[in-house]
Length: 175
Image 1 (cartoon, rainbow, N blue to C red):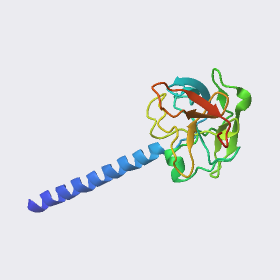
Image 2: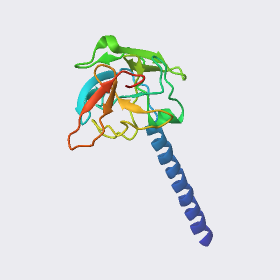
Image 3: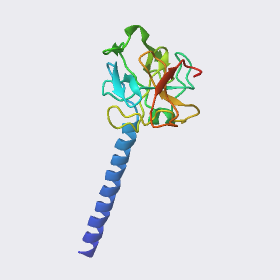
Image 4: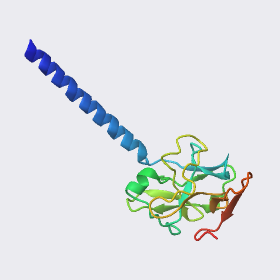
């Protein structure tokens, strides 16, 4: 009887470890970017002004370290800043210029959506539509910016007064 309780307890511990491992695997997978069959880029009004968003209305960012048509974010960078990838030609939503949409091949072979030649990314910590938690962040060697309808970086003006203004600048470099 004592041996049966010991085995039952051991089976329970093994089952718990397996369950926790599966949860960890699923959580890590949620940070990776799945390949979508179609990517729609639209405009959405946020606290930064009107910016580009994906089909789920999550903010799209550009990485100041990227070069026109070339992504410099891969590996752990891409886990926190998932690239907007697609197998098909991206679709322009309301207010987005179709002529500025394009794609570039990533180092892993997937096709990443670009806007005005800037590879586009979401931010893993933007959990809800319209959040802009990644704006101005300096992760992975350069700044991250939300993207304007013109395809330029949206810069938050320094807040030295109670009013907030939003400006855009050419990329790169921002001046």
